[in-house]
Amino acid sequence: AQSVSQHNHHVILSEAASLELGCNYSYGGTVNLFWYVQYPGQHLQLLLKYFSGDPLVKGIKGFEAEFIKSKFSFNLRKPSVQWSDTAEYFCAVNAPSYNTDKLIFGTGTRLQVFP
Amino acid sequence: EAQVTQNPRYLITVTGKKLTVTCSQNMNHEYMSWYRQDPGLGLRQIYYSMNVEVTDKGDVPEGYKVSRKEKRNFPLILESPSPNQTSLYFCASSLAPGRTYEQYFGPGTRLTVT
Image (cartoon, each protein chain N blue to C red):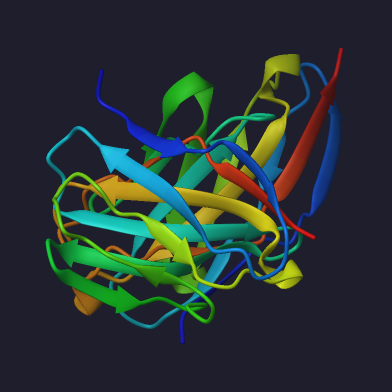
């Protein structure tokens, strides 16, 4: 069965620090990969996605992620965080061979950015 | 505005009292699903629907029912809620299943069962 691991449960940074959140998945076939963000009290919003092509994916708000197939990883990065990036971040995987849109989510990483 | 709406946003109820959480999308999406979010567990899929009158179980379907009589609506029914169903629920939709379209999420329904 597919699973997604997010190793950082809670990250605390100061503004302007660099961010990298880890995400590893377990599935041997073709996958689609996503990062969602959930700001306090709000619904999930898509940050970025990888379906195919360039493994370095750029998303909204200056976020990017790199798909490394050999490591089954899809880490999220941002060079300089802002206070407004305080949120919970979820990595998710979908296996298109299943012919459903079911997303398998990681347990999430809570990011707190202090001014 | 393209969106997924859920009602109610907050609900406190008692064990055994049947309730329905509505979900509606205005994007003509074929695929809809329900997730529950619990601390330390992330989001887990409850049920999904590939199209009208086509529904199937997700990973945690026990205690829930769904129906898909119209394309835009996908209500979640708890026939006899129990405290372990206290959670944050999200409805999601996408254009078509299995074709890697983005999923859009509703604002969430926070349910407390006492």
